[in-house]
Length: 486
Image (cartoon, rainbow, N blue to C red):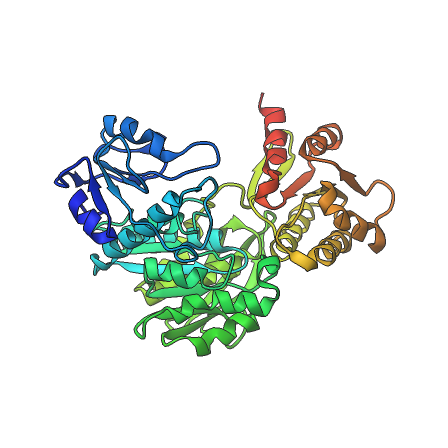
């Protein structure tokens, strides 16, 4: 963050000074986790399910923090954020925020982030959204832009009303690119995030089935995702997926220059001659208005082609050559945890940990990668799909899970392990498609899945683990890897 005194911060957020004359200057980082505060930093006092950050104010100041941004008086130098009106402001509700102090801090944090980004005229803000692939694409974009200048991006899927401004406040006068991931659980959420750190470049990846329960239809999801391109300035750039009609149709909703990406011939930035290696890593020829270049990705999965094209288009618009883009994409690695993490055990078992999140589109892509990897050798390796619940699908829940179970059979996955009673329609779909006997099994929880896999997985097998993050199925993948590491 750029240096700011507590008095300046109070003025920016409309707050009041508490137990300070306002002269101390924040020169460190802004943190909400008391374990990660830095000397000279600013601490965000936020309530949580188990603890309240306000209770740690004195402790963090004793460890070198300049002050606290709080929602009520604390036992330390602080800026007290003004209350927010009921029904306004934050897109999400904080657990444990009985008196609204947390909402006040988040609203103040948003104002502070907007002030800082406005003070950085050399900064280009890049936003990315979509139903799936946001985090992987954000990671690719950041790695492709890094050779062009200092780049900031959030860790993992830090993409809401806390993670968004917190990441923006990582930028300083040396930062050239700020890459932000935008999520939404309702109309207006993305528009609100765009007001926190106005993007000049915005990319929409896809419109899928994630969050159908909140939006009701794919058209409703598209309306919300399109808030990103609506927020772009006339001198901005909208990067849209030409292979998704609902995304390509957003071109009419923006004043910005539109760049289409994909395999579609209408795309200005295209991938042709796509191939997959035995680890499901894609190679292709990158075709752009500025020339062509061969690309060989280091990340796994054919779905990464579209993500890479988005990163390529953004980098090209910001000054890179096709050759520079191809080189950066070839070096780009998986950054965020539990996303297509392919690890081979000493006994030859390959574990694919893609358990951070799941929706119908991402599960289909993961199953296809599993099929590719398992069949890359002769004879083919035995394939396991360990799948849990895809959350937030609303009324589409049964049909979507049923279709995934059927797809596993059509792809000739050898073993389907369905985890949890809520995922039962996936198990039933596999049986109805023709998977009888022991090819598909329903287990009650992750522990049961681990027990089954430890007993039945053989050297050389390939095991995919995938479910919505809240179900913690990544523990299954980690248990498989720990089984031979001890």
